[in-house]
Amino acid sequence: MKIHIADPTGLCFGVRRAISKLEEELLRSDKIYSLGSPIHNPQEIERLSKMGLIVVESAEDVPFGSIAFIRAHGVTPSEAENLRKKCMKVVDGTCPFVKTAQKRAKDLSSEGYVVVISGDREHPEVRGIMGYADGEVVVISSEGDIPENLKGRKCGILSQTTQKVASFIALVGSFITISPEIKVYNTICKATLARQDSVCRLASKVDGMLILGGRNSANTKKLAEISMDVGVSTLWIEHAGEIDRGWLRNKENIGIAAGGSTPDWLIKELIQNLNMM
Image: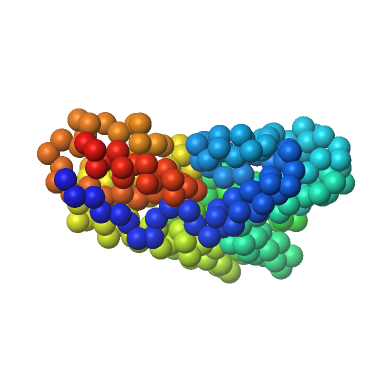
């Protein structure tokens, strides 16, 4: 069995930056409170928790005078302000690409557009972006979900940074026929584009694809979907212990790709396990 690694794969710039900021602060502090999971990888969060990371669900759960961390996915302006008011220090780990999406939403709203976000309404990144728009905001997961009340109105369209390119293109195309004026910002991050392209290329050359990443990771989910769309047998796992030996049977070439929030140590662990099988 030969192992082929997608290039690039694993930690993206934004997540690597967030982890680095968090680790630097944890070396100086006993406890740091993160509003929501800093990144979407349970194994990495477990490692950081042993260093002093405490994940909470709301700003109310952060004690006065403590140190807070803003996750890579970002938060709403009101949440950030609440943290600044009550904390001794706030470390901002928001991905720069997410910050760009936040600014685009604010700009489109101020220009009078209905802000349309291509993505998952329940994802923390999308909730954060929504908070930057002062006017009407609509989140659409697919081109078939466009509300009737948007017809005939001018719409500003942007994307969750980890959205599939094909989904975003399809949504924008749908608005051309229903809106008299649209303004589009491609806010899918470069790391996402590169990883999606690498999975598409590799999946067409192997007998099976192993997608490594957290179940709560949107970008990992998209990589698994792209691999399956190519038509290759695809297995999405969080760690090496989830490898199904039966799935490996009769496969001579195995491709490995990892989500942008999957740390290098998990990828190395997976490769080592496969080499021993």
